[in-house]
Amino acid sequence: MPDLLSFAARGLTGASWGAWILYFLATTQGTIVAVTLYLHRSQAHRGVQFHSAVAHLFRAWCWLSTGMVTRQWVAVHRKHHARCETAEDPHSPQVHGIRTVLWRGVDLYKAAAGNEVDLATYGVGTPKDWIERHLYERWSWLGPTLLAAISIVLFGVVGLALWALQMAWIPFWAAGVINGLGHWLGYRNFETPDTSANLVPWGLLIGGEELHNNHHAFPASARFSQRRFELDGGWLVICLLQRLGLAKVRRVASGLGYRAHIQEPDEETLRALLLQHARILHDYASGVIAPVLAQRPVGRRHLRRLRRALASGGRWLDPATRSELAAVVRTRRYLSDVCDFRDRLVDLTARNRRDMSTLAEELRRWCADAEASGIRVLVDFAAQLKGCRVVEQG
Ligand SMILES: [Zn+2]
Ligand SMILES: [Zn+2]
Image (tube, rainbow, N blue to C red; front, side, top):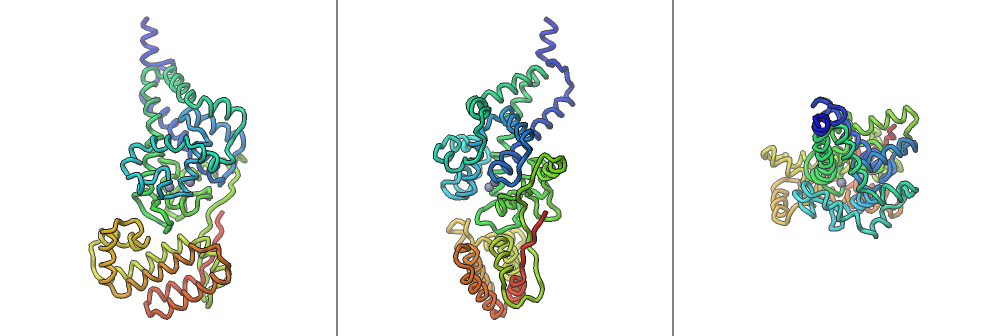
């Protein structure tokens, strides 16, 4: 009897609280790595391919620790990118409200995951082998149940508590924090047509997923970090696996560079404009709009809010705040001019499917008009824009 009680209390291991914490951190981080590397970067975006042994390990661990089905996860996520911030986006805080996405992100995921039409449209290319069909997909609930049993055997009742925490941990950080706050709070390197933001520059707690704005700018890139001070934990694991011959990186985001003394936009300028438009628009906001806005003193917090609103053309503001913004624009000399130039630049980058000679002509006209504007920061930006180029990164 005492043996049975002691087993119930401490499990087979009789481990101390230090071991419990270690087990919890290792297993939850293991799940985060499996989700960001396998489900997200490899299956949903094809940025990296793993050796089949590693892929099977990720699949098995995802099944055990989350019960999520690869095809469903991929379909929901690809739809998020394809329909971002619209009524069809499965988890946009702009549509569903930040509280709903943050605290009830799992419910939104479950509601979206069962849509058969979306599975057929967005779930293409995910595993359909025997183990997927007969175990991971058919008995998805069995994985977490098995993990609960293992936890109880190892740690007794504490194991059950650890398992419950594990089950809440991933949905909160992935479905709540990334899908919710990743479209609400933080800084932006790229003026993407959505509200994505980088939560913190060091992506270590959620495997690099913190760099959500970088990811929306280059969804197929296996590496999420873009600037020198940024760190992508998931990328470090990919590099390690690549060294061991267990991963093959397929795509990494390119960068933006500049050539001096380019008189007219050329083919390289056009290529950079099309591939790097989100970076160029961001540089326009910080290099042209911000200095014109700052001509007249305004509180720092207010200034940051205005800069952010103007960088996206006031797109995410409610009507009242948008008219407030329009009033501010009228009080600054040149501000409405540089905002018009921004709209023209957005238009140039948005219509990237038309023929290149028309695009080249419109870009030339944009640069000529900007240089004739007499607005110093705009003249400088146009000179720099003509010499921009794509920098391939390893
Ligand atoms: Zn997103
Ligand atoms: Zn993605």
